[in-house]
Length: 351
Image (cartoon, rainbow, N blue to C red; front, side, top):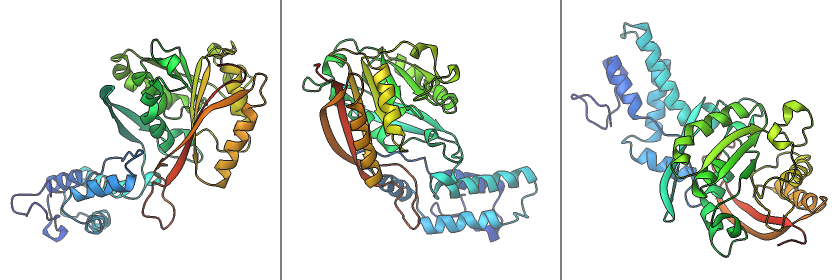
């Protein structure tokens, strides 16, 4: 395997009874690194991890056993305490990479995009350690699924084509989370996109916007991040730029429903921020994980239809893809294949 010493076959892990040096162990451990996986419409996380493991000569069981033996070892033959700590830390990281997202601390994933209609690009997205219910600090599968479909909305048959074929209007993303969807939209559509989420999510969202700004500006897009709390009425929940209603011709949202009150809050926020014009549109994606999420989607559609100027669906479709990387107990595949509903809405009586 990579990092082997001249005396040891390239596919053989170091034997601790041979007292391998700090340099040998660190080189070996770095060679066992598993990149944070990404997934999409065609490829699941399980398939990606399997491909990564096939690049390594040893079986997953052999590697996990090896990592565990290092963590349990006193490394008595390594003289420097800092070197010991480095070895243990690297071994712990390699083990965590094989134990699911919740076992990892902060990670940065690189999300690739490739389509004949635009130059290939990659977005780097930081995800802080997952603590409690900080759902906005992880990248959900729907963001990447919808981002991979964005180019299809520029075709003449799309209900968004009139907004995207020439000079796109400023775009608002609600519930941006880590920002993947909005950042991709800014690049692919060459548009100005405002990413928004709760105040607690904003620091990481702003970081990702700044991190990817050179990539986006090279294409002619621009992006910024701001705090916007659905249903917020106090000054600390409303950015000054959102005090003027009916501003945005296009709003995008992915995977926004996690509680019973979300449909009403989201519908109200969309109604407030969306322009009251015949050309204004909303692009939504909701993963249909179970009966609860299906019910929330039904509630959202009803709430959209009861606004002052109702919103109605122009087009609705379903695609299949991976939903993320949360491991269920006893489940070897952390990415669940689910149906992803997407819909485009307009103001009733317009368009």
